[in-house]
Length: 477
Image (tube, rainbow, N blue to C red; front, side, top):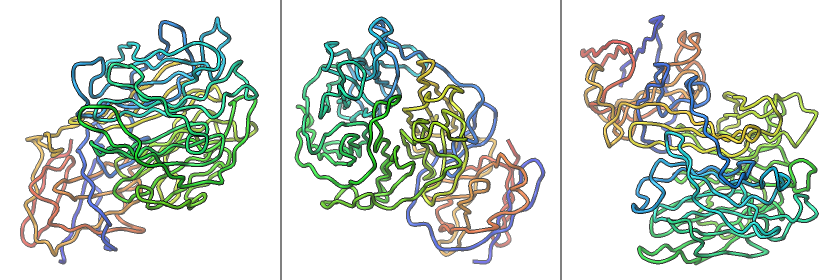
């Protein structure tokens, strides 16, 4: 077991190995090369490694709806034959047009953006005041359905909110097949996330009016519409209040880690992120759950929330929690589930511009998308990947690591600035943005992985590996 690993990049600095407890679960990964020729992998943070070039696409449809809120990728396996295609991005609009007053809770449209930014209208509902106001609660089921929350107003003011709102289920053609209303389990559906298992799904919903989080269990037949088979309130007690600028504040963003069965909740009016364990099977109310992140230096009313491939979380600051905050406006904040700040990115200098966001990995690319409410656009970053359909790097110029004995271990630091990981028949190696991190490897806490999980996959950066008397090395990118 006494083997060592060195990785070199530019400065050819030497790293030494550290050992600790084994990680709980494997996580598949893709070796990523960004538009700026930086290596990105499953084990690294997203925001510090985003390419400088990105696509900005208008979210304003022909009817002029404004204020994009929800963002959702169309997943692989989505049925063919309709207007949506895997990799497309759906965006819901919360406000009506300028001529109508640009009023909150009056938006009626969902637009479909192709990977190249081409926009088409996917859904348009009734514009009668009080009928629709499409929220951040937007999700797509692989069997061909789109879920979207609605919390309409009459005049754009919180006093005219039409309680309790509703959850619409649309088919692949953008037609409403079900409208769910429930004053207990859908009390102001503000955001949602889906655990999609094909023929069934768990839909987690944050209810901004009641300060609760609920789970709807769906059965989805191969032919036919979804059926609700269960409803349960799994969290409660989040601060809720109306707001003159943001209309209403309460629990918003949700991100579900299916491997750990943890649901993360961004509670805007608490200015904190919480974790609910056993969320998929829970039948009791966990109250707020466990607070995992509260950071007045970086958070100011967290809204949307997404989980990254390495287990980090990214949230968007809505800026309404504290209008006098010293936190720069309209920022995206990346942090770890342990509550450690990782990085930030400003979407716009105008307060209140950040809201919906989403991330997907598919085949040879990673896509990260975030709305800019001020410019009514969706910013899309694309990180290119060299990978085969199994997510394994196939770049011929990069060296392979032979399969190793199962009792050999390799350390992996969770620190965002230095990470080497290999698991689930995949390999990952981070090229740190901060070269100072190359002065040491695993200097603080670390985890270990079975060395046998490093099969004959290629590595994306220059390496020198000592395995007994066998050395493997290769060129840097």
